[in-house]
Image (cartoon, rainbow, N blue to C red):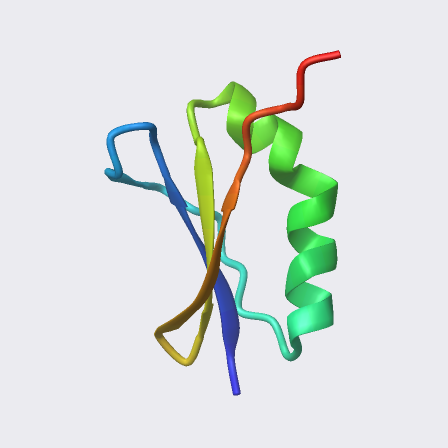
Length: 66
C-alpha cells in the first residue's frame, strides 16, 4: 500500500505536492503534521490523504483562530 497526500487550494484546484509516497497511514499523517503550516502559507487549504489512489479523508489546513 502507498499513502500519499494531495493538496488543494480554496477552489479545489490541485496544487503541486512534494513527493509523499509513504508506507503507512501513520507515516503519512506525521509527514503532513510536520509540514502543513508551510503548505497553508503557500495557498493550500485542504489536504487529501489517499491510499493507492483512493481518498481516505480530507483535512482542512486553515489554522484555528485563537
